[in-house]
Length: 108
Image 1 (spheres, rainbow, N blue to C red):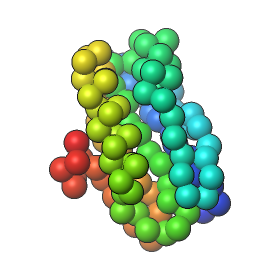
Image 2 (image 1 turned 135 degrees about the vertical axis):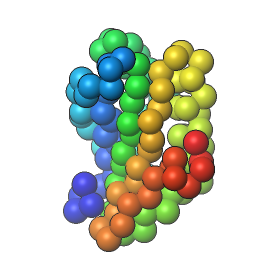
Image 3 (image 1 turned 90 degrees about the vertical axis):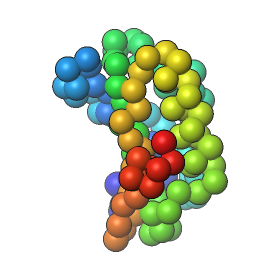
Image 4 (image 1 turned 90 degrees about the horizontal axis):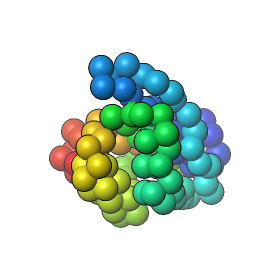
């Protein structure tokens, strides 16, 4: 993902045993942003009977630090998913030379 010119949001959906059900690019954005509505993500998780998800998106700029929008989006997703009993395992930002884990940074 680090080599992509535009940001992409990819999600891996897991079942109750934490077996991967599906991994896919759910949306492509611009060179500096990608966005998705929480309801679309949750709808897709429900359609797969997924109980956990892992989010990942890239930063073509090369800087893996999450933007303010990244943090807001992630916190919104975590809140909505928690209420619906879907676990958000992590959100990882991938850049050319490094990655950043929201869980490790204490953002979620």
